[in-house]
Length: 194
Image 1: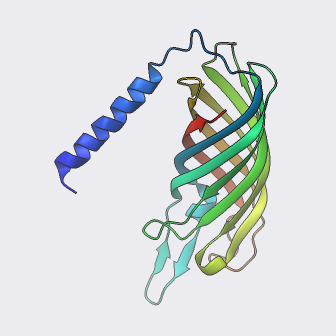
Image 2: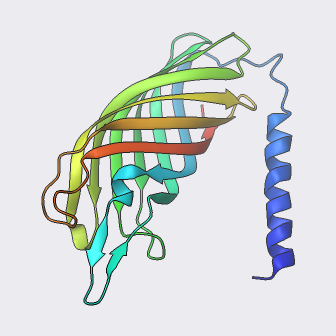
Image 3: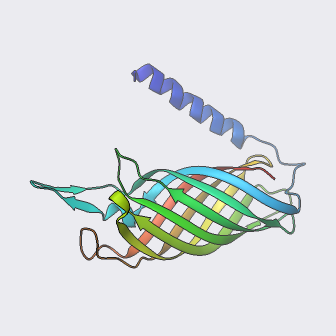
């Protein structure tokens, strides 16, 4: 890819974020009722960064960078400030970055600071299971999370999340013992369907 094309893509992305950030919510609030949203993000996982493979002449270490996370939420909005939801997040493997992949299922509550949003905080917990090449289990455990977010419009939002906890190792991968602590920090752009 040429340098100019990469530069144009970066400028387009920054422009899109600036446009979304300038959205006016003065007359928009979250309407009580059902909630369904989807998101995509990227982040870093300490559990994923401890994975390594002992090859014939070297030890190959993988970074904890998670190129993309896919998330789906379903729940209820009882008031214009409160959301309660179940969520599922898939962090798939990437052949060029790392074969590590994780699936998280849990629940969370978010609270907006005013009826006209745009900022909110969230907290929750859930179960995380990680695998590496060919279905080899890397660990499982309960994680807790907290985060902050901002609605750009009634439909589009952005979040910064931190998941943390301990993962039980299966002893099937290197290094043994595998690091049992998990701190996963990621940024997500989301879209609320309803």
